[in-house]
Amino acid sequence: MVRLFCVLMSRPDIFFFTDFGVQGPYLGLMEAAVGSVCASVRVVNLMCDAPRHDPRRAARLLAALAPWLPADAIVVAVVDPGVGSERGMLALEADGRWFLGPDNGLLSLVGRSAAHRRLWALEAEPDAPLSASFHGRDVFAPAAARLACGMRPRLKSLGQTAIVGEDWPATLPEVIYIDHFGNAMTGIFPADLSPSGALVVQGKEIVRVRTFSDVAQGELLCYENSLGLMEIAVNGGSAARRLGLCIGSPVGLSPG
Image (cartoon, rainbow, N blue to C red; front, side, top):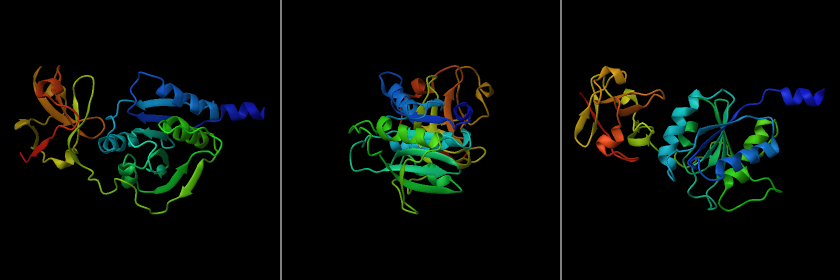
C-alpha cells in the first residue's frame, strides 16, 4: 500500500530545453537517465532546437518560455558548447521553478527576472559515470530526477555569487529563433516600441499589427507573439525566406 501511494504521488514534471535536435540518441539517453533515478516522473521536450552553441540567444528564449511552465517545473537546460571545460554547473530555484544547466549565461535571464531566487553549484553524484562531453545525461538529468522524487542532488550554496551573463541586456535587437513556418522571433519586447513604431530589417520598415489576418496574404508584418516577444512574419509565407533572415540577423527599431 505504501509503495502504491508513492507511485501515485504527484511528481513535478521535468522539461528539457536543449539544442540537440531530434536526431540521434541524446534526448532518449537523457530520458533514460531520468527514468533510472525516478521512473514515475513525466518528461516533456519543451524545446530541442534552441540556437545551437549559443547560450546568449538561448537564454532569451528560455526566459520567455519559463513563465508558461507549471509553478513547480524542473527544467534541464543544455546549450553547452563549453561542456567538459572549467565552466561551472548550476542549480537555480527561481520563483519556485528549478533550472539546471551550465554556468555559461543560459540561466542568467531567468534568474535575473525572478522575484525570489536561490543559487547552487551542482556536482555529479560520486558514484556516477561522467563523460567529458554529455553532462546533460550524466549530471543534469539525474539531478532533475532526484529533485522530482524528493531527493537532494549534490548542491553547494552560491549565495549572491554572480553568474555568467548577469550583465547581459534583457533586450536583444536581433533574430533569436526561426520556426518551421519561417517566422522570425526577436529578442525585442513590445514595450521597446512606441505604439506606432515598427521593426526595421535591411532598411525596410515592417508594420506592427495585432495578428496575421490584419494584413493581406503575402504581406510582411510584425506582432507580439504568444511568448511576449516581437516576431516578424509573412501572412501565409516565410519571413526568413523573404528577407534572408537567420539567427543573429540584426533588427532595428523605428520610433514611428
